[in-house]
Image (tube, rainbow, N blue to C red; front, side, top):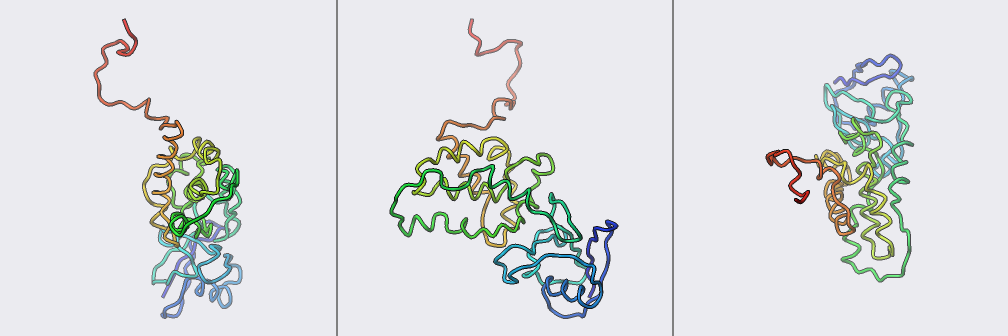
Length: 238
């Protein structure tokens, strides 16, 4: 069995041969580093799909190395839109800054009794492990590096709908620029989330909440609906 890994030193793919048996990608990377190439660099933590540290791209799709079972011919690369420190190890600091920009936390805590239904409302969103898989899969970053992104907006939804938040509008206000309206709703973030979170739906819900707070899609006013141009403003009056 062979897998190919993108090496940062010369930006080329290097192929490694492994025993033909079932193993996780993290197990394969550890074996390669221990027996074939001590210079190979990657990151890992809990080894149980809880910490999100070992996220990489396999065949163009984001995966957790500790959970993904390798197949012959797999191509392994670092996450997109992250500065590569070495090989598969990336700097996630810029991605985590989106959490600060989105102000996704309780702004004005108030006492509230939470029912089981209330807890279920954002239970899945709370499972986010900040692996950055959705960030890497999001095509918006190719054109807008300042986009808040899927996991930050999911976190914003989680707190803006919390009954203990006395000022949900503060969160909604802070996700309008480079936020909910910049998303293309392509669903790539949802497809790669290892915890089953649906950022696309969370962002859709945030758009609805934004409308209730007086906001609208800023691109709507510039859209053409195929109406004829008579050379005058039909809303200008006479």
